[in-house]
Image (cartoon, rainbow, N blue to C red; front, side, top):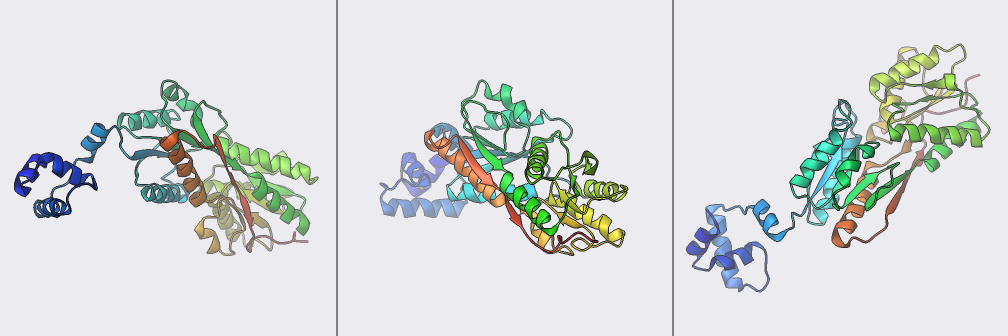
Length: 336
């Protein structure tokens, strides 16, 4: 059933039905009730896509993420909190998964598809894939937001990630305990987010007078298995580190598994620090000391930046999110 049939049943003009559907306040309340009664009786559902095209507004934004597979809940939380922020402002979210593992340029395909679907803006929260969007953005003035981007592109908002505070406090915490041999599970250093964390750690350790030895850096994947394998490598060294920082919590929990299998306990035999502060960290044994990188705050900030850009084109070009050290039970003094 279409609008004209609804109008005939309600004995009003089709323009009146259109105004009722679009919540125009000037319509007579009696007519509103009459039209709504017919709509409910026949189960009519407006074609929002057609309405969006007619108005030139879709009230839809795009969100591009990666790593939905593999058991890491970080990006699932990004989607959840971005969606909540969008709904509060009356927007729907079109989510797509950039399969950058198989093809880094897939993120550009995702952005193209979203533009074809008339989204009003796009948030790219994949970390490190921005270079593949240059050719897509060249001919587009579509509002767009990146997170942690190393690239400065005209008209694109960026949520800058300040890794310094969290990593600095984590290293100082270890130094205060007396640790001098600090290891690191690096993750994939061809990813800008992992590379930036690693480079920040090197600067921080140098700043406190500790050298981050290359042989204490396990260049492993940022997964459960990668963390387990990375920790096994560090423990196999003639002189293993007394403390290990990890590129994310997933790798840290994989490292915990290796420690447990060797009869070692984090916080007693070796100190262990993760990164992200996933809810799971509070329930590991022992609970995981980590560096908080909140998907809630990141997603909310990314939508805020995108919304301000869509609404009036104003607002800051750069927004900042700072990490924070979270102390739990997996760190302690070096074992003598």
